[in-house]
Length: 200
Image (cartoon, rainbow, N blue to C red; front, side, top):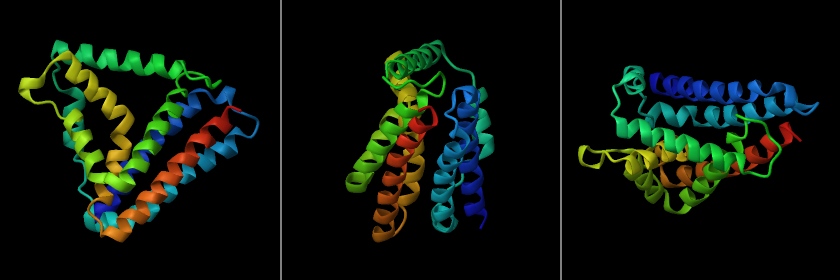
């Protein structure tokens, strides 16, 4: 139960972040925007509720102490530059989208696009996607270049959520793994269009 509760708490902290991004641009919502936002958030809540019981058996909680340390740790100049470049590139790419969505909510369509593509690929080659995430997100002492940090933070942004879910799914029995993987893909695919409807 502690693992499941930790999973549900950490997942909902992430949902609160998404909600905050949407609320910043509340004045630009469609007239039915509040209802659509509720549907958007409910989609993630449904996924997390379905994963609660498997999480009780398979989830490895992220320690709060580790998160705090990673936020406030001393960073080298190369890491700051790589992080800033990743932010600029993601921002410019997001602003280049043809959707009429204000900043910073414009991040959500690009993020969801990559998420559902990764979720689709994960249905067939899940471990390859997980390994690809680790190869970019983990920086060793001999890899502390600006380009490595750039790819690290781009990967964290576009693949972090999918990795979080797929890592849990990978520990389940094969059939459950694939059923949840298909559901996660369909949900993220639908969430992409729901976000567009908020600002339609």
